[in-house]
Image (cartoon, rainbow, N blue to C red; front, side, top):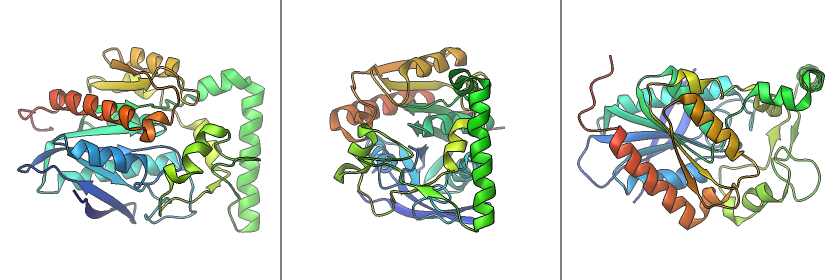
Length: 303
């Protein structure tokens, strides 16, 4: 199976994607995927998209603006507003393709993409169902409470000063995405075990991220989307142990939705759900079965 190379525009930028199509008569139900912080389409989302296509679901893996093979400056720069616009326009692109049933589109978010997927679905009724895998549901209120109000404000002040420094120097400050020693945007052995090894090797990935990206992580509010999402159905798939995206936060997010389904996998690390066959295969089977029930052929047209 080989993907169809696709491109679409968002805010005038050309975004590069790969559309994996099932070996079955069209039109197909379709999923748009968004993935981990710093991730590109050849990594986690691409693996899930290819696997989901074998279960009868068309699946779009694409590079967000400023990442991978998509346009946008500065490079390797997290911008939540831009990512949400990208997801909106990815859905629009899918609705225009003859291979896709426009009334049967869902979303999948993995790791940081979990928060983006639910935010996108909460604002876009064309996304009929949404699921997360090892999702991160960023909540600025929780960050503030953990750091203290003064501490949180101090961190935001330091990043505001970084923006001024970037403007004065005419270039955007960067740091490694991962590192086996020293400073990194994703510190620790576990992120390095994936991104710093052959496991995460990909042509489109660069071990670099802008410093100002951390501000986006601290201020992006995914948690509020839980209460705005219904009646769109939600599936939360999460490892029982996850040191990077708290299982407790995932469960709390599902409770705030009110009618979400939570399924637990016996993963021991966050990155187990990136590329370990038995966990990915289990997650994909559960996603496929759930979307088959929530993107039925008799779906009513979006009005």
